[in-house]
Image 1 (cartoon, rainbow, N blue to C red):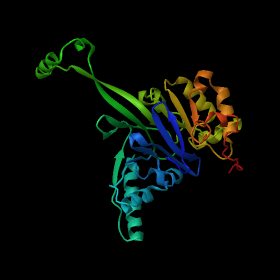
Image 2 (cartoon, one colour):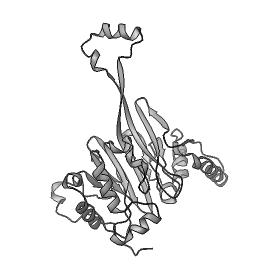
Image 3 (cartoon, rainbow, N blue to C red):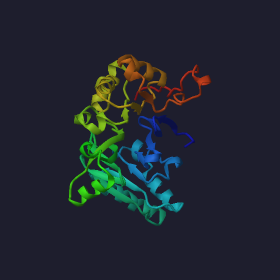
Length: 300
């Protein structure tokens, strides 16, 4: 996946996207057929069938109608949008108004979810929605691999013996759920931090917009995470990889990486990837170059 999206391979999971606070956030896991938020609907994500919309702020949702329209234009099946229930009617109204502008209404599947709801992407792959703590109705999403494994007590039996037990109605398998990627969207701290789909995700995607020491109150006021919150949260998780999104242009990528690294253990620091770090997966001969920065701009 090329273009302006930044791509990272984290274990066996590919993550790509673009995220700058107040401008645009779109994060895709292409092989899982999901895109967390839509940003301005970059062309690279149009083939992804499921948009998991965390909330309705413009930098996360502006491209929704365009995404659906473009899929229809090139002959792809209607896209599926999973969103907080409070947004379902406004999204449908948005599509109705765009239909008036364009002269035809774009087909779409809009699914409203509440915290605790689940939605099957395909057999064995489920989205788990959970409430996060933002200023508007908002959800986080965990993409979970659901597997069925033979119970240990039946491990030594032959095929025919297992079939015979199943015919008798014996449950010979147990369900195992493996959270693959969890996206928390824009949020302050909250009960979501205690969920297994967050704690044990292979890849946990967290926002961090505030890094300055005197911006804690600003983070709280906007229901966002401060870097000190993020450092504490990461230290509590069992995840294999952490992806940090939603940096503000107030803070360069170099500064953000240095600040967070100082606040976590070396073991946690090794797991951290900043989404907008184009050098993270660069060839060795590029390692000595300065990391690409999100250029600072004056605070609003």
